[in-house]
Length: 255
Length: 290
Image: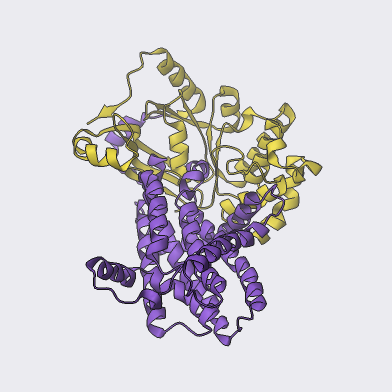
């Protein structure tokens, strides 16, 4: 398997749902047996098979609750599949949300090192990246301020600046370009294009056709946890619109 | 442009599809944790920074906390027990410091996966880093609180013996034990929030059921069944072996007996093994219970 490959084999993420969430010992003991019999599974994703080749860019499209974020988290390794399998090769920059893992009390500087450590980098490695990250984020002297004082734009800029400097084989981004001013969005897009030309695999949740078309030739449509379409972005968008208009079946519940 | 559902039916195993990988083994879990060892260090520093932020005395609280407890216990016990040991405050402190290390690690550590759930939901990392970093920050506290202990020892003319060189080894065994127990309770707390309240009560009981404020030598002999039960409990209690690792060198000025060290080490290794195995086994299911 080459670096950057993402493979999903008939993958499903299921949640057991109980009438009431069991979180105390008494409830568990009292209702253990009933729940074992009647536990229903809610499939946030099911029967999803996808092969994403190294260097490919794919946009994930779907209504709210269709399983896009669940799929991203599964690829990032945050969620383990309940059935089927997932395999990824190479380093993943798993920025599901920009600035995930920032500690509000700490300064931007400390957060760069914290975030680097969360991604498995040593302090030494982060020191080498530090100036580049600060430059990219355009935060200047603000870098020594606690991030709780940052505007949401500054927050996102720092988040993206770190995510773009981890030398990933796979870049996973959810709603990146929704924040920051237009000029910074342009900068992000340029950086993503650079990754594309460098052969980084790119998975991206999109809510906007123009951005998706610009960045990804391929798109997958998720609909109620199923893969409804996988193909060229324009056609995917049509399918997505069609599904949106059509009657929506309830969530898939199976005993 | 193929519908995925049809694709899987028409061609269940396309040639380009790589083979299913093996499931990750335990050794790879340890390797992953090792890769994130720097994160544990960063989290320890963050924990200490955030804990003492905006407090005037800062890290000094680490040293004041056991000292204040010691003063209270010392006053109470020397008043009601006329024949208390000489240098009773040192005796107390030598028992309280390992006890506080254990109990504070456990109480803070069992909540650590839950209190870091924002990270657990978003970033792939070995979740064991959270309880382990709590133990790490308490190890720093434990080490720092040895300083006032030494000051008091000097002030009360308690002899400093070579046995004190054993303290790093004692800290190591204690740390392994704390890590194991904390890992086990941290994963249990994710599934049952009661564990926290249960542990709180159990720790309060355990303080008196362990030789922290007294010594096994002071036990004496009684012919009641509950005394025999108590003695059996003390024999099975791992803290009966872990506390002396610190108290023997500090208060009695000698090394702990080989039996004590062996039993304590076995408890520590066992706790770590069980704790780590349980934690890594249940870790993938944590996210559904946060």
